[in-house]
Length: 174
Image (tube, rainbow, N blue to C red; front, side, top):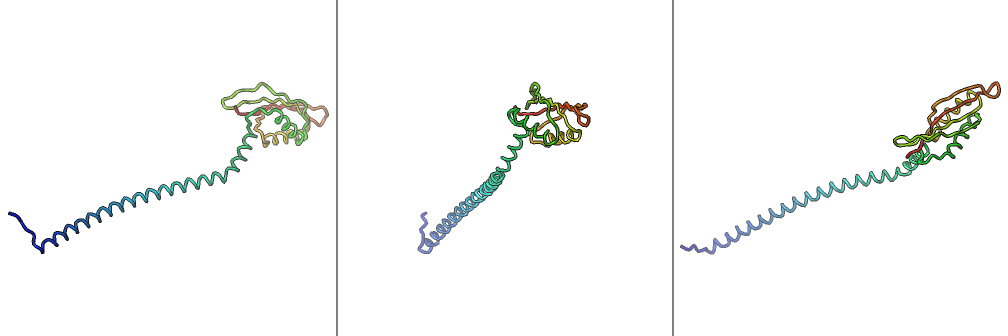
């Protein structure tokens, strides 16, 4: 038994097939649209992250001069070399500013610590008591890290002066 299509059924079947093809194409287009939206969201998230990183880098670049100054200051506080000559100049200028006279400067044997070296310094000074106090303040506030270990005070050359034996330590990095 063979079914024959009538002239009225043929356009109906063609219409249904065309409608199914249109629905299939619409379904495919909606799927592609959803995929494109997901890719867009992924790209937008990547752009947002890249923008954030760029802002961080710009901020760091803007602060680089400040960081360079901080690094220079820290290298003065604890240099990478002993710099005894600069240490002597520092001690002489601080003593002169405080009204103390340096009689002798000696450096002891360097002591190796975990991340730095310690330089023992032995100073013999003469001056007034308030000059000694000023010197200790100056050394503490100075550009180089110094730790006062011991201060011995004795009678100076004249009645109003004192003689001071000061032991301190300076530091430098390994």
